[in-house]
Length: 348
Image (cartoon, rainbow, N blue to C red; front, side, top):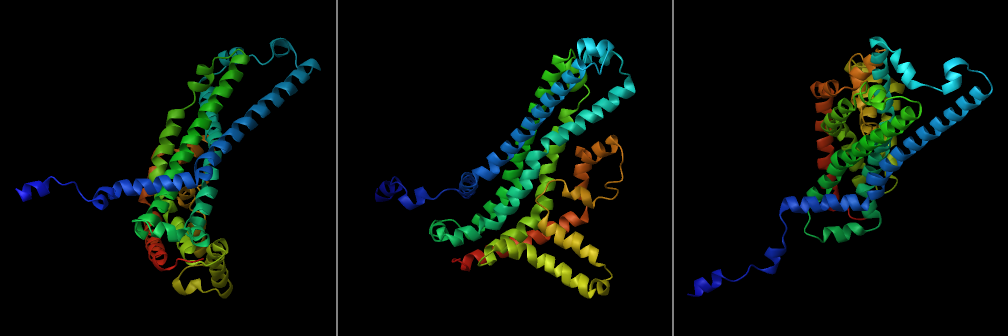
C-alpha cells in the first residue's frame, strides 16, 4: 500500500523544472535572437527599405527629367503627346526582345533583393566576434554559467544563430524587398499605360529567385562554417580586441609567407594561401562567396550566363566542391576549440 501511495507522489520540483534538451536549445536560440534583434532582424529590413526608397527616388527623378525634356521639346510624335507609352512599346516587342527583357528583370530583382544579404555578411561577422567575448567583458558569463546550460549548447546555439537564423531572416527580408520592388515597378508600368503582368510578372522569374535563395541556405551554412568557427574561436580566446586578432593573424601570416616565399616548399604559391586560408576565414559570412571558387566564374559576359551562375541548380553544385567540405571540417574543429575555451576562460 505504501508503494502504491509512493507511486502517486508528484515528481520532485527539480525534475519537473528540467527542460528537454531540444527545448533548452530552442530557448538559447530565442535568447540570441532577442539579444541581437537589431542585427538579425532590423538591419536587413532597413537595408531592404533603403533599396526600395532609392528605387522610388530614382523613378521620381527620371519622371521629372522626362517631363522636363518633353516640355522643352526634346521629344516629339507619340512620345511627346502621351509620354512613355509602354502599351504601345509592348506591341512592338518580338521574342528576342522579350527574352532580353526577362533576363533584365531577373537581374534587377537580384540586385534589388541583394541589399539585405550584403548586410548579412557584416552582421554575422561582428556577431560572431562578440558572441563569446562580450559576455566575458561584462561578466554576464558568470550568470549564464550558473544556469543548467552546458558550454557546448551555448556555443552551438551561437553558431546556429549565425549559420541558420540570421540567413533565414535576411533571405525573408530579401524576398520582401523583391516583392516591394515588383510592386513599385508595377505602379510605374500602370502609370505609363502598360500591363504589369505582360511586362514584369510574366517575363520575370521571381519563383526561380525564391528557389535559388532557398537552396542557398545549406550551402551558405557549410561555406561560412570556417569563418564562423574562426571568429568564435577568437571571441573565446582573445582577452581584448578580438577584431584585431581575428583579422591580423591570418593577414600577417599571409604577408609572412609571401615575404619569405615559403609556399613553394609545399608546391603552392602565396596566392593559394590568400585565397584558401585568409579569404575563407574572413569572407565566408558573405553570401555567394562559394561562386568565386567555382571553375569558370566571371567568364560569362552575358545576362544569361550571370543568371545561370545564380540559379538554384548551380548553387547546389557547390556541394560537390572539396573546398566546401574541407573548410566545414576545419570550422567544426574550431567551434570545438571555442567550446573548450569557454569552459575555463571566464573573465575578460
